[in-house]
Amino acid sequence: MRYDVIVVGAGFAGSVVAERLSARNKKVLILENRNHVGGNAYDYEQDGILIHKYGPHIFHTNSDKVFEYLSQFTEWYDYRHCVLGHIQNKTVPIPFNFASIDDCFHADQAERLKTALIKEYGRNARVPIMELRKSRNPDVNALADFVFENVFKYYTMKQWGLTAEEIDSGVTARVPVRLSYKDGYFDDKYQVMPKRGYTALFKKMLQSNNIEIRFGVNAKELISLDAEGIKFNGEPFKGSLVYTGALDELFDYYLGELPYRSLDLVLEKNNGTFQKAATENYPGKESQYPFTRITEYKHFMENEPADITYIHTEYPLPYNKDAEKGNIPYYPVFTDDNQKMYKDYVEMAKSYPNLILLGRLAEYKYYNMDSIVERALLKASNM
Image (cartoon, rainbow, N blue to C red; front, side, top):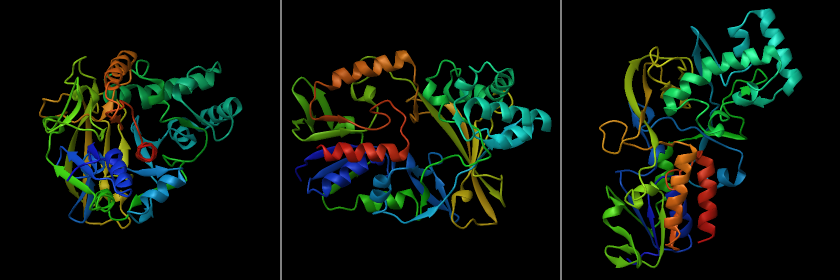
């Protein structure tokens, strides 16, 4: 087969582009390093429980376009994600909200804090912790210090290997303080899970005869970039190359390695039910909790089995491609120096007009699932 497009990676970014182009009768080859579709959203069934191999993925979006597009490949069931945090020997809602304040402070102090917050920011506001810390109101400032110390500070240090001040403000803004009793983790219009899991969704998305998938393939062994352009199997390739992998790897780390954070996910089987919520955070010091959170997968299911359960405990690690643990790049580390190195790699990529960079690794940017689907739909429409 002569290919019009080669896609590196069968996660959301690559799969959406492949599906959209195949529907326009383009011949698409997907090169996937793993032995499955779905990227980090891949899931599998064990003892009747759907386990997310690379950590929890909860679908939520405000985009009608994204929801309607993905609905071609799956049915859904409603799922409202709630998270609890273990703070000073109590289990309280995360994001920190008015119920969390009631749990952590005496009644009179809690009322004073809630009144001060509403007066300064308005009822139902969502305030990033770094914004809250700028308040000149002593009550608000004291609460901000409490939340920062007990919710953000050590969790951030464990998750990113950086202090909250060193990391990009967009990271801490992702989990604001809620000035209400609303305890859901997300506010999106659609909060759902695919009825038969993400893997089934991907398989249906990629079932076109115009798509060929090769698993267990290192794309670098088939694709090269040189002064003459992009080559596939040693021959010039004039079609489009949609690359969703790590950009520094594509250029053989010519400018150095871009830092990522990784995870050691420890899967355990237990009897009964392990915890109250699907995800419970442990934001204390690393000496107390060397992990960040525990996910119990049966809470994601439409009908929870009662007798057994599976949990994932997450231990953040620095990414090391050669290590036994931590060899999967999960999260780009957002610092000014890292962004500069990435932009220099992008300049190198501009030498290849038929190279399209797409996705969390290729763009060195954190994307929610719906955001990368939307971006992939846009990219495909312009190809």
